Length: 318
Image (cartoon, rainbow, N blue to C red; front, side, top):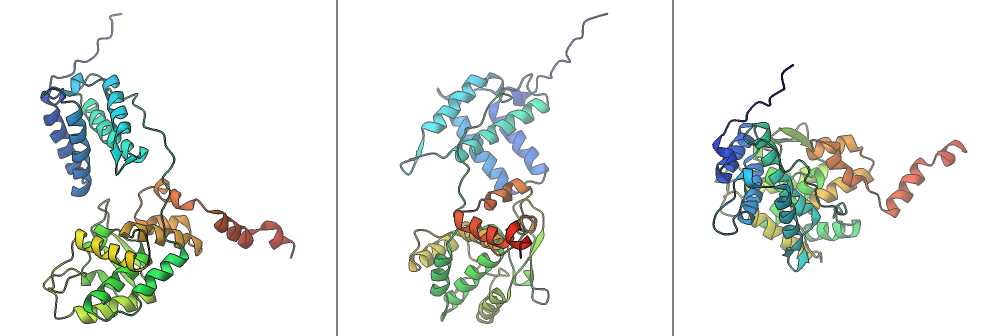
């Protein structure tokens, strides 16, 4: 019986040129339907790695990258600081995950004979704590936007109510138009989501009232189809909304305030109010329950309330 000979791997250029490999990989991600935001996220992380493998003006090729080199890259990331604090393990792992995705793809496409990332381990660290507003902080924030007078104040109140009542992302909110709102069904359509899968989210009566009052003042100003506009009628952008959030947070006596913190607050309050995790997964647009599970960590007060509601002995001994 003759010996088994491994099939040769074609000598394609992406295996010999990092820039070509990265661009081919990103083109593949685009073809798979990933959002421009996600593709840019990959690009940024790969550029960071490219700088690391260009020590003397020559960028190493993918074939020259070894497991030891990848471990050195990990150490370099761990030694970095951000605002005087060590870079979080989660941030390091997102960069490593992007590099690993590139080399996994190169190996699967047979541009490489072996995969240096096959045994690359991610950094261990504590699971990130979900930062949500307390009941008292929510109360202070709602008090700040309780009595709007100007156009901007009505818009900001509608924005806060929308985020707290639906948990949508900032980019999803920016994609909304007036036609996105189904007043009869009490639903909002989100055609542009993070995973590019359209979904609908319901909204309650308090949010409905705030949106309706804002839209009454929006009429006649709009030069854009966007739901959220400025005084000139133009669509709001990320920077303006983040700035407005910081101002509202400062007025409410909060250390910081952003759209994602309100998303976390929605999720936490939804569960505390009796909502189930599977419905929350759909509302947040999470692809897996693993992403939703971080909201299930209950503090001692939550545990006590949950036990009081569901205590088997108290229920059966009545």
